[in-house]
Length: 64
Image (tube, rainbow, N blue to C red; front, side, top):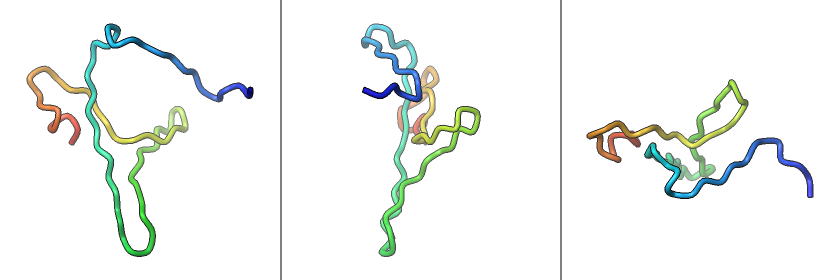
């Protein structure tokens, strides 16, 4: 099996202390379907948009 180009870690639910929320933006135009990704230049990674939820912030607001 080939080695992965990135580090992988597995965590149990008891180890999560931060909650994140996110959205997936789709464009279903007739020409071609598209999805919006964020480019994290520092690590040259393409990611779905998300953010950490602050205390007393709704999941909806954190996602937006």
